[in-house]
Image (cartoon, rainbow, N blue to C red):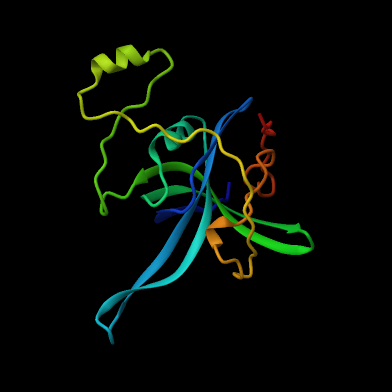
Length: 185
């Protein structure tokens, strides 16, 4: 199968939105990826254009995103690139989604303490006995809702606050791909 796999490094631009559905856990957030370059004239690093991606995580990865990811944190995201286009209120919109297969903190820009995820056969009490005392896991935000507006032409004052695709549709599928519908809870 032909698919475009990407690996991007950026900062979390929006609070992760988590949902438990009949199809399993799902989470999404916006990732800001800014090109940096060396300005020889000023002898300093400069920020270039910023691209925003909607990152989708499913199942265990979604649950771990909820517990581990906050706005402003630097991440490395690997996954399948999906370009979506749609019409809303007579305007054309385009967006780039990444269906993540792996997400991690960028250790070139900070430190992290890894904690193995709970397996279904393990209880929190048994995990506490096995814990090495490296610190408690962060509690992620609960489900949130909301719809922010923005236009693909770049006229939006906050490009991170672009409209998100519906939970029922998920990331856009390519030709020949079929996905089971996700029911909103």
